[in-house]
Image: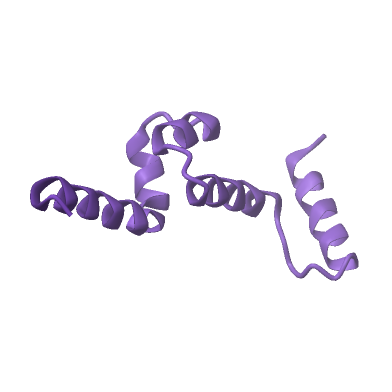
Length: 83
């Protein structure tokens, strides 16, 4: 199927289903975001998306990893302070 036709058809179906203005590429972003939120490692999400480098994935989705940074800091604190 032609990518333009697929995108147009998908958008029409989403509107008809009263889901709003969606495009197929947004499903890709949603899927990646959900995987990261569920704890899937960044390198695995990068492979699933077919990115040539984990840096691409980090640049696009790195802002979603704030909780990971907090957890790492807490783990280090616990290890150093015995808490």
